[in-house]
Length: 245
Image (tube, rainbow, N blue to C red; front, side):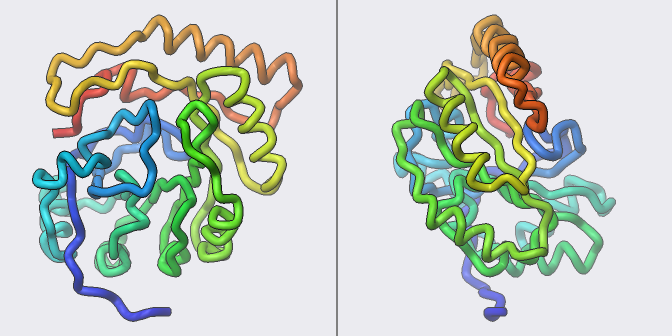
């Protein structure tokens, strides 16, 4: 295991506790630590404030101690799950934060597209790999994603999550899940209407999202894909694409 770095972490926002809106831990009370910076530029990204370098000036360099002080303030010192998100949180030096939280019985979940592997993935409690489908405009490096799984080892519980907009995305998800048949799979309907990051009145096409959800339900049923879970993004249904703070 490599040494714990004291390098600062670029933070876009820290907020909660609120519910996890998607995937493996949907509905679970969570504090979110959203890092700044990403090696992807997905066409439908709904967190550009944590991705695009245009917003780099809004990202705050924070030490693990400072991040942890905010997490414990928000949670009232009561252990819960901390979601490490982004952007791509795998870019950031997060081992020290994870170690600090584990000493106080907090749990850590990280979601990443699987493009960058870190040895500290093995120290997570949950790892959600969310490779991006064709509608994102990004290409998947399957060797890199496999490296993420190898780095995680037998440490965290690992799952695959796919955002689905159309038949091409759906076929991609089926093919990807066949590569890793031992991993649970979560599908969620995509959201076409990301607002500007400073839009406090963000409006989402909920009818479109739910139509896509119903279409997905029919697809997996017709295809007899019975070991997959189809879920909405609860946070989108409740709050649209508003920022956490």
